[in-house]
Length: 332
Ligand code: GDD
Image (tube, rainbow, N blue to C red; front, top):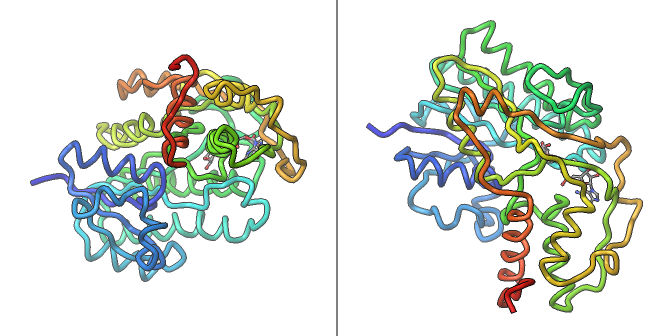
């Protein structure tokens, strides 16, 4: 019998990579998606289009407990990866109420339904390094205190504590991943890495003349999303549930990412990047850098993609999707 998994947020960057990874491991993969995604498959299901026929999709909304209950009752699965969330930090300042509602209540609904219907199911919660916010120590590990700086960060701290409480109070197998920023060619356009690679590619092709960004000095620990979903799966295979930081251990600035991405195209970012205050956040997280030694030790997990490789892959993918042949620096 194949193992079975249900992924919430399967249409997103991480959901699509995780679905591929689990299929490759022989899993039967189910995804929970919003009904509106079924109405607009070309746009909303684009990241999982190539998996059509190999995964089963079920409509439900994180805002509706009955809809989640119904899917969890009807579909049989052993592991649940709860990735669905409002995940854009800047948007959480614009609409903190929706972010809190989806990210806190949505998580609570999933946990409550699991407890009722499948208490033995293994549960993964997508925690975030944004929970560390104004960092109390560097690098950050599983013992570093949280000090979130945005409604998004607050919602993830609440989700983290909810998941931990179901583990402690009800004996459920709940694991929290504390994932640092992870990206790749499937990243949404609003996140800074994709905005930069897409913007640089458009400038190279003559489609744009400038790229407007906010704080170039923020530092993040960026890894490849395909590497990070492997860690999610490994967490649920451990003998005991636990929490794990997943990071590369190396931080870079947004400016360095610009330098690399534009450099791939033989462009100097300083000629094209313009600072626009609208992209500054009311409260910024200046520096994140993770210590993933627990994951190295207990999960045997290691990242495989470097910062430079990440930028190169993303620029090449953006050039390709913009319909042109990639002509990268050093390749003629
Ligand atoms: N989005 C964006 N757009 N960010 C900008 C811009 C811009 O024009 N200019 C500068 N930045 C800076 C932000 O201020 C932030 O410091 C940094 O770039 C990264 O922003 P994002 O790419 O939006 O990601 P994030 O680090 O805030 O959050 C991501 O990583 C978290 C894990 O640490 C998201 O994926 C979260 O969902 C995730 O939890």
